[in-house]
Length: 489
Image (tube, rainbow, N blue to C red):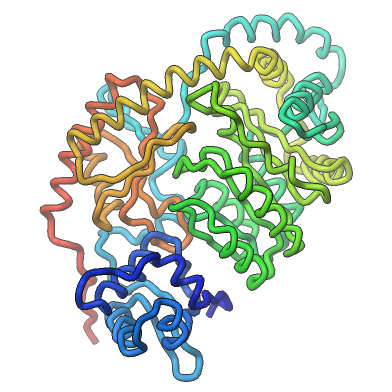
């Protein structure tokens, strides 16, 4: 069982005001159950003693005992004499699929599962736009430049010097002085993260991840054999709980997406960034920050939050950047910003399986980054139209779904009101639209009442997608819940 523990005052803070419904114990049990299903209270977290939670909430111990008893009957907590109680999930799921298994083995998401060869099929599983309008000009300029490099071997394990300089200048412009020798160009952000997992974490090490988070990062950490420590971010980052979990689990590395978090769209405030970096320092952990969406604000005049690296004085923050979302997914170029000594370790570590990134792709990315403000403006205009069109269609056709309007990024994170996201995805695909359910973005099978809805497609494709989703949701709601078959001996 996990050694994670939530104190009475911390659990009371997560629960908020004491529920006004009667009986109070049932409302309290429902609130705790919601925290578990929402991912904000991790599974196998030891709960406070009944008297401690009662004191923190200002309730009687009898009320808390009754709430624990109900949660135990429902399967949301387990107890053992002398060991206390800890959070769990019931063995029988309402979904026809097993979310934890689907998440662990990839599920039907990502480009490994291509959409049907049908022009009417709508793919809401992929949050990546096409190339920007200036792409052809950038390609032409890169091709003109290519002969300068063709007389050499073409292998630059750290990346082309010209591209590393442009990337370093970009960090300096955001208040983080950076030299080119602190940059390692990689073959995409996923390659960057996998490389970091290999260098910074050993099998069995504890690695903190957000829940929900980017599924392929979870896959890389599982492949490395690390022990995943999830922290819920559906309501934003609770730095006090994150810091406590870092200490309790002896976290070696933490992975965070502070800029328009994928999939929630949250933007971490500056004060929380400083506190998170301090928590990583005190826990002696590396903090890997994914800035793939950092340039995708929908309001270009809004002030930008400083990078996490701006609060780091000890080399604890390692930053990942990528061309795939801002520029184009077909450009398999990413990068890592870190200290010069760690950059050299990463360069050596990549050579056995990936000696260098493509030269032409690097030259194209350099040309696009030199005109990055043009690209940002184009992306903001297009994504804002898509976001508002998707939100309007959801409000009209699925008014019971709950979502916020992110200030950037590429997707809405919608709470659908019932733990049926996996079955919804199956029904929607039969109706010609792909959507990814919440469990894919988590570690242990929760988040079944969420779906991610990208808005990178044109508005005239998003409304038909929502129409099909509405039909699929009505089908799932009308169907009886799946039951575990009886065992015969």
